[in-house]
Image 1 (cartoon, rainbow, N blue to C red):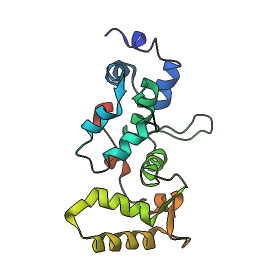
Image 2 (image 1 turned 180 degrees about the horizontal axis):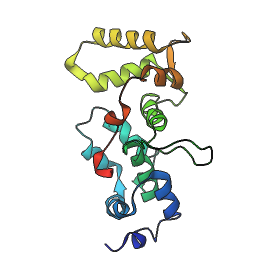
Image 3 (image 1 turned 135 degrees about the vertical axis):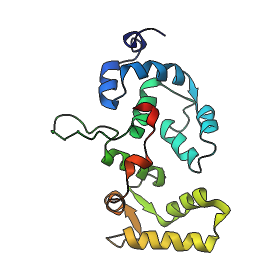
Amino acid sequence: MGSSRSSLRGVPDGQQLLQETGCEPERSGRLGWFCLGLRSEDLEAELSENPIGDRIVGAFFQPGQETVDFPSFVRVLAHFRPTEKNWTRDGVQPEPANSRNRKLKFAFQLYDQDRDGKISRTELLQVLREMLGLQVTEEQLQSIAERAIQEADLDRDDAICFDEFRKSLEKVDIDHKMSVRFLE
């Protein structure tokens, strides 16, 4: 395919994109051919076994968009890179997409489908239905959602905002849950 420099030749702000996403130049060439004309159906087929695959696909494709360009693809995929262990916020550089906070924001948005900044009981139930399906009864799903809301909802508004979501996942190894190792 050529050198990594040639693989970035047609990408606007290619070097900035690599810096922003942490994708290594030698890997960008391999990803570039992959997402050239990538359609939502292609990604849906790859994620068909994932219970929330349609939500993940939605992160790559805006409503009405049929294909994804390379920069957009890499920016979303960067959330799944292992977390930078030695990254420190200096106030100048933006927080990397694979930081714990950005991974949590990405995950939060998978739940917050109406984009109102809160995960409602309805949205939580919808995700639980997708993830657990027929394995549990509707009554059990309602109970799980109720308990999750009670535990996370610190301001008692019957929804979970991002700060509450982040706090409820303090002890979860988000790097393990949201990392794709082929991007290392």
